[in-house]
Image (tube, rainbow, N blue to C red; front, side, top):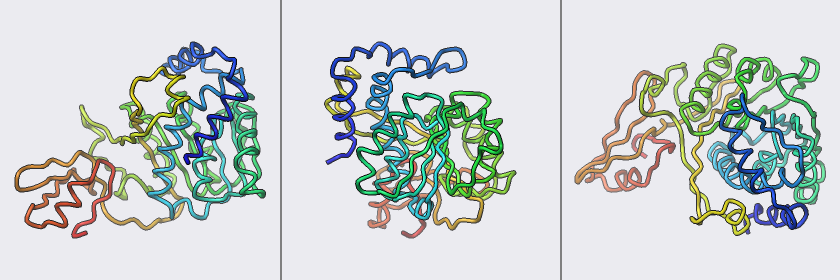
Length: 323
């Protein structure tokens, strides 16, 4: 059973059985599109719960996919600081794979902080009694240097897109972190934020782990006018989520861009596929992210095993020559 189903049932029964905040939720999502000019504050528990149900499932699914594909990157993580962590979505995604010791949510909304602690106590404490869930209730951009602790992992999930000042503070916020995880919407703006973050952290001698497979700041999509580096995760909607979103389809596609970095070299194998495979009668072509150019790999149909594997590939998969 999907653990998110249990979380949604709990949230609905505890906070939303008599709620009618759907209009407020839509207004919140509208505000997120232009956060610099609109109010994105969450100051009510039922609105916080609504947000977790509406966005928790797609965000957790994307995070879980990234964690699973890069498990060596996350394997030794024991302490996490989540900048603008909202209801603690990353904590629940990571807990399916790793038992961490310390999670700190730097979040200005007291309602989100309360929600994350309530959910952690209800769903994570029984299986991980040593887990400590802390919080700093303030805008993470206002953190003083003495408030920035050493940690294994810093995460910014859908936060750089909310403020132009986030990128300006990025280097300062991660200077005591061994690893960094940045997740952004899979839009041209989200990709632009990823590139700017990557450029800044490469200058500070961080190493890119994923999705980039190059060691420099080269990106074959940096100057593209009609394409950008992003990926898509299709996921099913729950009964409660369908009702809240007034959805017709039983699924939704979450488009995202992301970046994993380490302050020490990290082994990588293969190259990233950055386009949909193009299939002809006799061959299949894959666009690959390489060191200095946007290269194309041609797979011949007579090499049945390789052709079959390539045909199943999607944008974002790794390509290993000869595999």
